Image (tube, rainbow, N blue to C red; front, side, top):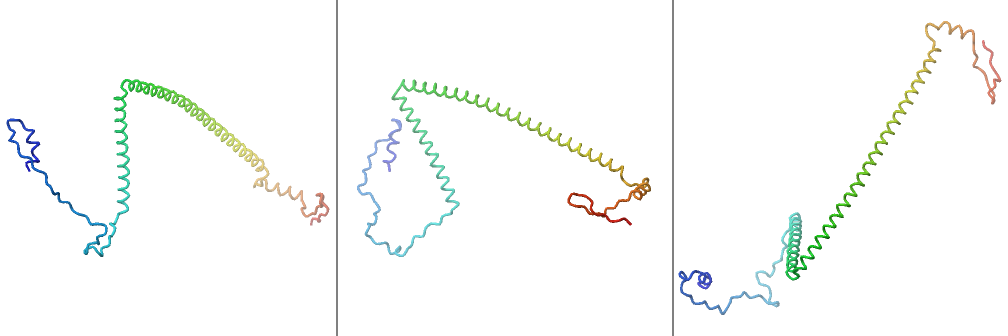
Length: 212
């Protein structure tokens, strides 16, 4: 037992250090649990035992698989990040000044790419603004044309109603009222009409009955 605490005791100051303890000799025989050979028969207590699979909950299995996938992805990402950091440090240590030059070159390249990206974004933004302005003008023109068409339809409708009113006013003049009832009766009696007649293919009257 003292052998376990010997390094701790040796690390104490000199004044408080106890006298050296004898080292414990290692054990010659280490108990190891033996295993059955391939040809050994099964134990009598397990001769008729059938292994029943452990029941698995499908929902729990899906959750476990999803969490394991996330764990593998996170660990892989961390491992890749650490590996990249280690390789970069090793490269900087091995190359030295060339690493600084390469880093400056990469920084300049990144800055050029960022400038190009900004210019491209500005160009696309101008094109987008022009397209939106053109679409707004076209939409405004379509609304104006639709309003003109509606106004034209409304004018045609009003003119049609005015013509119907005028026709009705002209027809009212020929209506039979209490005031002109006697006059209309006298006109009918003075101008009798016989509608009992026959016509040929050309529309000429060929036969008419005598009025009684």
